[in-house]
Amino acid sequence: MPNCVHKMRLLLCLTLVLALVSFALPPPLVQAATGEAPTFSSPFQEGEALVFTPPVTGASAFAAMRIPASAFATFVSEASGVPVVTFATTDYGNTLLGLEKGEYDIVYLPAPLMVKAAAEVGAMPVYNVVVGGDAKQSGQIVVPADSEVSELSELAGKLIGAANLDSAAAWTLPAAALKEAGVNPFRDIDAQFTDSDAASILGVLAGELDAAFVLSGAMEDEAVLAEAPDAAERLKVLAEYEGVPVGAIAIRAGLAEADVEALKAAFGDAGLVNAMDEEGNSVLGGMGWEGLVPAAEGDYAAVYEAAATLGMIPATE
Image 1 (cartoon, one colour):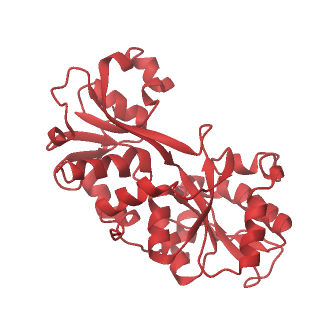
Image 2 (cartoon, rainbow, N blue to C red):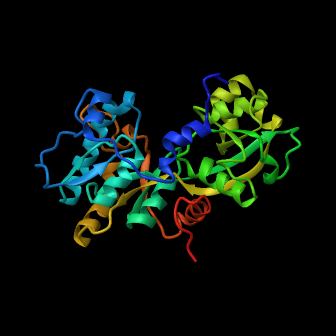
Image 3 (cartoon, rainbow, N blue to C red):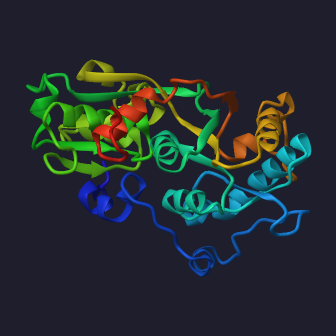
């Protein structure tokens, strides 16, 4: 496991805004980070179109996102008759703030932030994204097979790896379960941010981590099997969380009902799955998605509950 693993507490100071607060970097900082203006080309004049924000990427991937995101906006515009343009945000806190101000109309949000946006500004998930063949994922808390830890409460004081704070299945639900077991995930564990689930698994196998929050299937990751083909035998699953959405395309509150219905029809258009951008690549694939499925009532119930447990949103009676 690389020695450059960062302490989660440092990461939380910088990015736990994703769970607890919202912030925005001004456009000049976006341009400085990327060398390019953040607004994508569009046949519509500013102010005439709805604004779509694609998945947030690092600065290195920012330019690569512009072509599929712009193509997605064009497809939705043509299929719905509602003009849509694209604006790339620097972080999901910026996306939440833009939703609150009414600056962004159609947004992609990972599941934890989807429920935050719904609870705080009334955003509505309309289509869930498909990743890895499914719109839902399962997460696990894993420990070494010979670990003395058998209960979540026994993870207090342990060194735990997690790859993605945006993941409901591999961060929000496991963290909430720890808190319900009396272990504050922001104070009572020594958490480390790894760059992948595979790195977390290998860290546990190497004895560098006491446990890890990962997506189910991480033990069968190619990078894991290359170093530890017997990983599944050397690990035990302490807890598992199933059927958790990856994330959703959401629409802000207050849009005209006719536009909302037209947009929903465009997202469900069969042609979108096979749509190509100007370079001949999959539009959805360019944004890391394999498809879209309608969001159903109850999809995010477990995420709402976990988010409330962690203090991301107010608890409901």
